[in-house]
Length: 231
Image 1 (cartoon, rainbow, N blue to C red):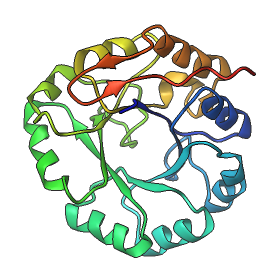
Image 2 (tube, one colour; image 1 turned 90 degrees about the vertical axis):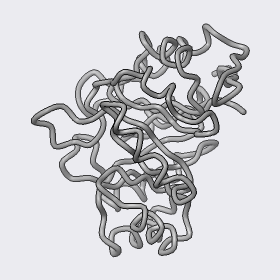
Image 3 (cartoon, rainbow, N blue to C red; image 1 turned 120 degrees about the vertical axis):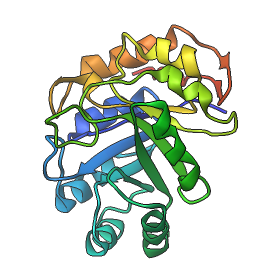
């Protein structure tokens, strides 16, 4: 099983090309007006053709049915990510409405937060474990903060998840080495300011991952990183 690598909050063709060219398995568009990474449905649809060789994930926060259906129809994502207070029942309804797989993001800050994982297993197609928002932030993710990854050692060995929250080129190897997630998700860690992706930082993130190729075996995955493109 290869390590999934998601670069989230992309807003330009250049950033999409840089991420997919280096081997990102997933790219994320965010549709949430409070986010500096927000894209309208029309903007996402216009950028959709630039996504090649990776799955497109559209990130939503407590969306209504009309929004979900409009995005499924106009943007044609490969997956939806629900990053709000959506219950397991809501996750199931979104899957039924769209026929798309759904990733559910859960905020982790303490060991008690891990109890929520069980209720979404078998309902969400994937889980993303992220840091809790800092005090004063209106953003459920993309805040550039991490949590104590060691908490995740308490999860059952067969729980697979993507890890998010404060990852960048300096700490991603520590995160992978400590807990062996099935995937990683980075957004602010490849930005020069909120919402502004930096091509050099995207390359730096993948360069850091290449330092541990060809493979690392672990609890959740056998990790092998994509080859760097020749371009």
